Structure formats: structure tokens, C-alpha cells
Image (cartoon, rainbow, N blue to C red; front, side):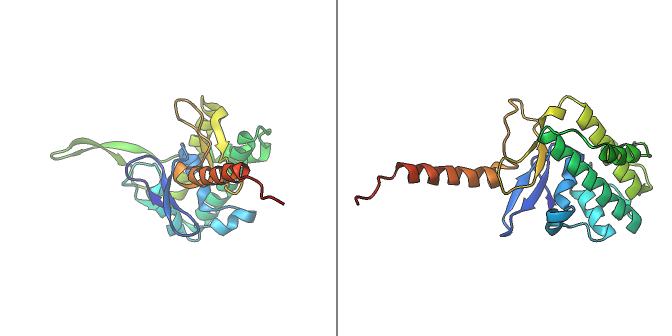
Length: 210
């Protein structure tokens, strides 16, 4: 997983190692591709505190965050991720949001988040910088607050699951027309275009004489 350079989002990789861009549309949903419980465990990348630091560096958070993460905070990240995944999936499929998952997000959002400040750099003027002392706890509070904004905001009805039957990625459709179906056209979009083309060719083939 890498930070996308020209567009918002992350660079993910197929099982064959081919990179493709994925824009989850929100910080909180960018945490979901790092793994999860059950069948999502095979995608797990948050094995050590350093892995969570790397995720933060590759996320849509502004760069320059000097982050320290403990083992307990790493475990908290997995707990929050699980709650966010269930909430996003429930919202995408029109199901009621589970109170237990909302409690996880709300409790985390009530804590102190990451904070930014204005620094003055010679030759550059005023620049955005992070307040020192960034911790995993503050990072997760920031992620949870982003989730509160998403699930209560104007794009809450656009939280969606990728339209491919074999993809588990979730995203918020921030496009103007609001017709996004795939996690990425470069991945599931193209795969399904190929499947549809093959199906049309198969249906159009003349039956053999018997």
C-alpha cells in the first residue's frame, strides 16, 4: 500500500502484484484495506506499530506527522477498523447500524485528536505543520471524527461496496454524478468490462449444427 501521488487515495496491489489506484473518498475508509477479521485477515498489514505509522504516512493526512504508536494503540486500531468496516458495509447495503459499533466510534471520537499549527519557514512563509506529540490514540480519534462527519454528512447515502462480486472494498462516491460502481476502473472496472464482453460474445455465437 502506497500513497497516490497525483490523485487522492492509496495505491493498492492485486494478488499478482499489479498496482492500481483506490480512492476510498474518506480518511476513515482508507483504514479498511489494511485488513480485518474473518476472511479479511488475509489482507492484514497492521502487524506492528510501525505498520500503523506507515499507513498514516500513506493516507490522505497531510505529510510531516511525527507519530509514535504503542502495541495497545495498534490493537485499538484493529478494533476501530472492525467497527468501521461493519458500519460502512451496513450503510452500503441499507442495513441498520449496530449500536455496539457506533459506541466504538463515538468513544474514540470523544478523545483528543491530532492537531495542526501554523509555522513560518524562511522563503516559504506560513506553512501547515503538526503539533508535536502525535500518538496512535490521537490518530484514531482523528479517524473516528472523520467517520462521524461521513456517516452524518451529505455523502452518507453514497457509502458503497464495490460492484464486483469478488471484491470487499468499500468507498464513498464523491463524484458529481454519483454513479461510481467500482473500487477502481483500473482493477474491478476493467475486469468486469472484460467479463461482460466475453459474455456478449458467447451469447452471440451461433449454435453448432447437430
